Image (cartoon, rainbow, N blue to C red; front, top):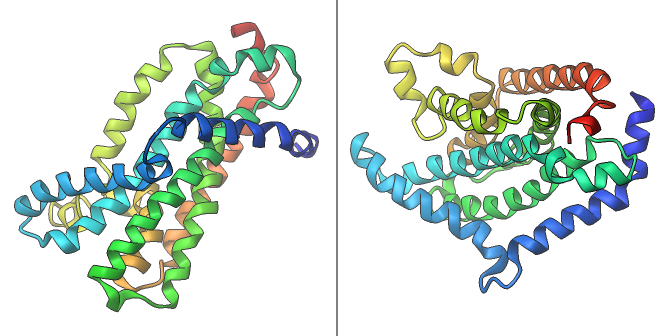
Length: 260
């Protein structure tokens, strides 16, 4: 394991180049460029908020930040899980020509997506500062912890998906359905009170997605520090995913090239 991590660090210039290449390709010849990372979630948030605020009889100004926080975090999750599933397949030319650790190809997605997540977060912070200035305080520092935590959860998750998808090419298609099911049972757009009022508190208390979202929502939307339970669930999810990635990787790492 130690040698594997050393190999990832030794290839840092290569995967950093891949990250920058992905970002340049994403915004190449675009008039708004990086601003699309803020405009897209904002536009989606406005459309969803108009509908959901009427359904739940909530104020758009206050409900929209809840939606926006869910949009940017969920899009990052989907980007990494679905992108990770195709990471080895799309990087087959590199894999066949080099002997770098395969996890660098999912790390590439995690880091490029992290930059986009950071840019999208600017729109959330700006909205909250305008609509809920009373929430501003030291607790906002806790919101920064979502970046390393979500990264250490999604990197091994994406890597596991990449190992399986190299062998089972139907998995990337099935992930669309699986992620929709996870979205439906998670408070991405629906407020936590909706689940609790329907006696579905289990979908919150034992759902890592809820606890991950609370790292952002508690400080920004409520001016409170995330709870210890939130962090324990997040670190627990990271540990489980990491162990799974190690176990699967030991068996599949050398076989991937035969499936490409």
